Length: 407
Length: 221
Image 1 (tube, one colour):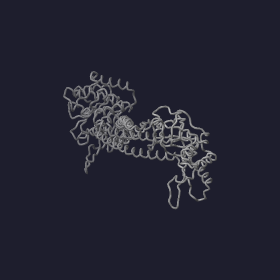
Image 2 (image 1 turned 120 degrees about the horizontal axis):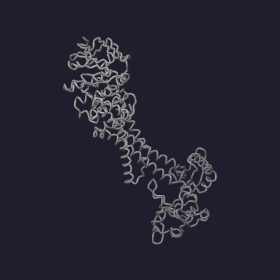
Image 3 (image 1 turned 90 degrees about the vertical axis):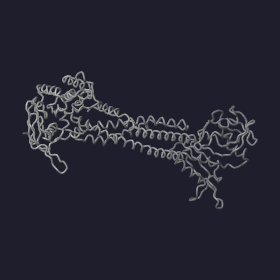
Image 4 (image 1 turned 30 degrees about the horizontal axis):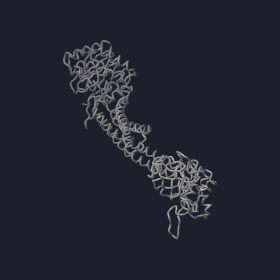
């Protein structure tokens, strides 16, 4: 039998029982909408995490000094003062896969400009910091290696400092005071926004590390809070980690078998962990949502069985005028498929709508992808065929004479 | 010989008891014949007609339709035989309700040899004209009288150009005027060479046939 008339007959049968068809589709509508909404919100979350991790700097390794064991009392990670700027220079010289490396010395202070003051974090770094953190100056410029050598009293300010301290006037060329020492602002950092852990990354001042140590802390030492290393590509991270570890063990003269006095953290690894947790959540919620799709499928099977019983006589008439078993089967399969696909389409629309509402309300990026809609439609049709199969098979196997006698 | 059945038996199993509906029935029908089968209810005449129509299968015996043995065929093969060789007319018309007269007549064409939409339309219209229902093609069965509905059923039975028309009490639900109209239509198509086998219990209806057979207790007498 031609497929055209079959589809026409199927839609006529569905229209004849409008309320029943709508209620049957509702199960599929709800299931599909739930799957689409969950997938879209989940994919949006993954994108958000990726972009936040990316804003940390690409392929970033963080090297922290190790913990200290002082007469049995162990300090936390970073307790030791074993990691120095010189270590960083050694690594930069000897490790081949490194693109950029900057030490980081962190402090905090009250900063004064005119009648305003603001407490913020101060990061002592080298010019390579801009490369490592992927963080350029939006106006003005970074300081130079010469500034690092001389411990020049220059700094760059973050976007939040511009708002809070300078009340949005252009800070470049102005002078701010920290501990009563004047610093010249030579640049403004690009705004980076809030980090994944909620910290405002723009609330900071960046200056040469030598300036932090010598001018602000009056300290002759060059130990660091951490070393930030940017590796050439994600594939090189494992190699770089091993090489750096070997270099540091050698330069720190660690005995064979003794613990490292440093820790290397791979930001890509952290990103991967966070992403896998979020995709696990998405998977879990999708499974729950799929269960409602399954329930919807059972509803379709139920209604199709009723429909076959109601239309037994019609089946008999069709068989008497020459319909073969697969003609009857196709008739009911197309009907089940129409129910589920219609439900799938409406559900996909509602799901996308729900996802957009979620994104508006929560300022949470939502990604309604063509793949997720395709997937939902594919599954709703699979469910239509799967759950429509048994009723259709029952109809096709009926004996024509029994059908014609059916009241 | 368009129909040739030999030693057909049909036994129904009702609970523990076997009921013999047809007991060693043989029948030959020449092309162009018009046979009326009469008998009381329970005599086995409807069972015989269902077997002749390939709607039911005999328990034993041979059935050759147009020189092809059909008694051992699968359900799909039987469906093909019904589609190509047979047309049915029932007592209660068996039209699809909420489906126009035209679409009812088109129905057998959907399952027959593949034809285009336009060709189906043309054929079905021609058939409805032949049974004088050209003005009623878009009416639903519920909007037609009994006689008109039976004429739609006849158009449907004729549309695939079958070898044999099988009619089960075709006038059972009709008044006497409609009955004789229908029977005259039967005689017309028979005169054009179509074989008709009809089951009835009305003697005056059987009178329109070329020959009449009587059945009792699953046998011809």
